[in-house]
Image (cartoon, rainbow, N blue to C red; front, side, top):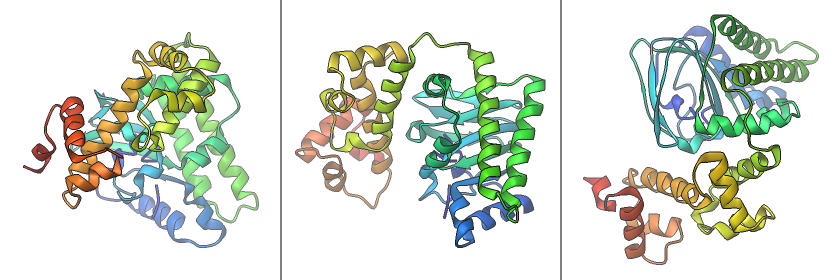
Amino acid sequence: MSEFANLCIGFAKRCVKLKCDSIFICTFVCNKGGLMDEWKDIIVTDTLGVIRTDIEEEYLAHLFCLGGTCKFVFNGKEFELHPGDLSIVRRRSMIEKIRPADDFQCKIIYAKPGFIELSTPQSNYATKGQLSLFNNPIIHLTPEQQIVCKRDFDILEQRIKDTEHRFYRETLINAMQTAILDFFDFHARFYGESDISAQNASIMNRFLSMLEEGAYREHREVTYYADRLCVTSKYLSEVSKKASGYAANYWINRYTALDISRQLRNKSLTFVQISDMFGFSSPAYFSRYVQQNLGVKPSDYRE
């Protein structure tokens, strides 16, 4: 199955009735073989729940709210989408507790990270913008920007369907790149320029990418990440503090705690299995870690 649930990435967990176009796009992208199978890298839909939950975390999500509201928790903070908002989630592990209203309507681009990287123009703003979205994944669009955003989504949807085009791959990448440049523009106008340097933003993004890939399951010491980024532990923590307001150790524990809480809700796993999954020396140490970082005992998740 397939994927732009890397925020949402979480958003795809709540199913809404599928419309015909959404079904066409999902079926076409996911089930065709050969060349077409390559383009399950991107889906445009107006429905949450198109992506199977077992693979949705492979995807990044750009969600344009058309009506109603949707609450969710991202990076430990609660956000609420309103009509005209664009939400871009690049850190899928940070999203939880998604609660769309009954009248919630949206358009979503689900895309794999590799396809987004291929389509993203080389720009220092891309690095800074990605970091800014980590702190706040919502952009409030003006009426004029909403028109542009809807056009970008519609063009991508049309390009996905135009499988007979002799330059199908190129047109799809071009359409995604245009959308990304418009998203850059929306973000820059709404949030302004970040005062963090491009070099430090790159360090922070690479640090978060390692955490996103699950390195914390085996490595929860700052020195491990600093060594791979070719900086000192002190410098990495200083960059993290300036970029996000928290030291590097906070993010290591934050990713670990969120992952552990998800595993604890999976009742098919024993506490010993989860403890081993995260490399704890003993179940007792694992239990202490859970209580210190989640504020509850592991058994509280099973009651």
